[in-house]
Amino acid sequence: MSEWRTSRYSERENCVEVALGPAAKIRDTKDRSGGTLEISTRSWGAFLIIVCASAPQDLREL
Image (tube, rainbow, N blue to C red):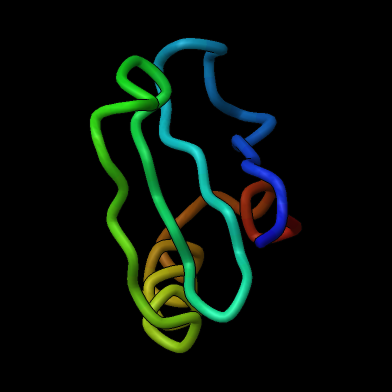
């Protein structure tokens, strides 16, 4: 599995982290041991398309 990443637009302790691999894993930075949400990379990609379509231009360059 790849390393956990946070958005460069997030505050250090007020965001979620994502690890991409065969599946996308998502966890809360405030409770890293509290569990993860695992979804398909296809679902993660669809989520990003929807979010970025309604986001300001600078977020689309992620």
